[in-house]
Length: 497
Ligand code: GLN
Image (cartoon, rainbow, N blue to C red):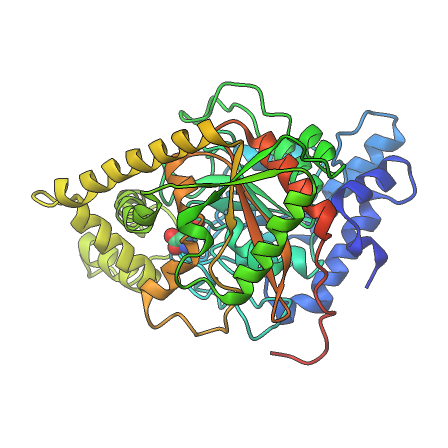
């Protein structure tokens, strides 16, 4: 494996800027690595070698002409397949979008291009970002580089696995209930969900519009912050985008790396610290990480968030409700798959056949749940009630942040589980996001950072901060990283899954 694929994005950017290597060499190294190992990992649904090399060439030409380069110029990146890329296949992991080439770029993709970042390809994911293991992709699962018999998390398992397998130094994910942080935790990588509205949703294939948040996947906290800064900031094309300056996340990540947390108050969420169903290995790694944070000078206090226990049920009413509305547009008429259009069937029959064949069982389940929760006579009892719970959870966060600077918890209750272990019972799959969902309902930022191993598999620690205080979580995450280090997966051996 080329040494270039082992480097962090910050290192690569430095080497490209000073001419020690070129954007073309770096991009080629990653494309070669994809050719070498992605058959086993299956992080990518589509690789765009030509497009990536052309973008790299443009960066090298700009450098040769003495033009100023951005902080990540020439550093290649993988993009979750739920984000539109002009002319490049975008399926959201669904058969119903098979063959669709979007006519436009998402705002965050446009920003990656403007930053001179070659896009290596599109990464695998649970269909329409619904799932926690990437097993619900219509194109087959992704395998965890730490152990190819285990899941890489989801829905953004492809992005996290690409980072862990060194087939990309950076990736874009989206987080509606944990889909950046949970895959980060179980692959030993860093995943950050920015404040809702801090990164543009324009060009994301919508799942649950009041929750969907794109953000960075990386191997280090600084790399995540650099990518965060490259994609964040107000976008007039997204009505919920926040018209304010991006919090100084890169500065915070650099400050945190000094390992000094004197005076920082960390809140341990009582309801999560000892929660039932949290694997002992996860609890042990988390406790060690809390000790490490204390040694860095942080003060750790317990904070009660009494309504967090209702977050999961509230989420599984709000997210499906919004999805049932958002997914109504997949009708087989305007884009993607069309089934049974033989000239003899009615429009309704073609729509129905297309949806039946184009949409997988988990997504169908969510559409039905959501349609039910919104239906007349049930709306108040389900959707309305869930919205009230959302308010109570937001109040828990607000009250907690009056006492502490950030909240911490394990990112997930369990480490990467074997493929197939949780597909029979949807609730078992939903539990993967027990600790990540409250933040989505509140809208604040949260990051997962590796904090150790349990039975040889990565464990993540989650740092949650107040809305638009994304810099705070980067500081704490970087400090933890300076104490516990980054995690390196075993070399992908020839032994297959
Ligand atoms: N796993 C959660 C779900 O299935 C979260 C998904 C996400 O964040 N996109 O809905």
